[in-house]
Amino acid sequence: GWCPLSPAGAQSTQIFVEPPWTPAVQWDWVTLTCQGLGTSGDTTWYKDGRSWGLERGDHFTVTRSGTYMCDRPGTGRSPAVKVLNERLVLQVPTQALLEGDTVTLRCRS
Image (cartoon, rainbow, N blue to C red; front, side):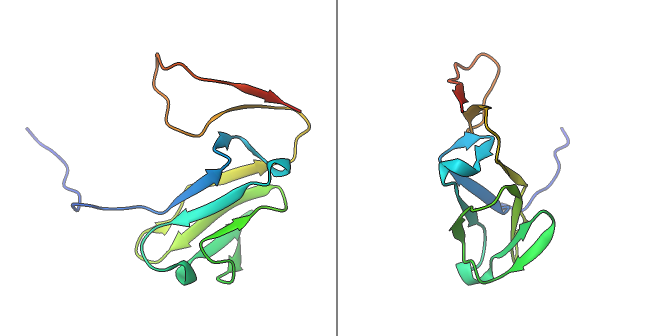
């Protein structure tokens, strides 16, 4: 059979959210951590599509709502993470879910 080729051990840049709930809400003191190749000094953060430069390192606590991404040389830009400032939110765990999984939902205000 035919199978597409991909480099062994290929990685991509990822953002990890703590606490691990989605959507993330600003009043939870959300910490974003960027993981990919290179060192933390190589991390470029983006908020709402605009570069914040390199000064934040590989993690920081969010103080404003918005859409965040990070970039690491060699693995590129991460998927976007939205941090909301809503008064009422229904959250699910950030882990991958499959049909049939049991999941805990949180309704928070």
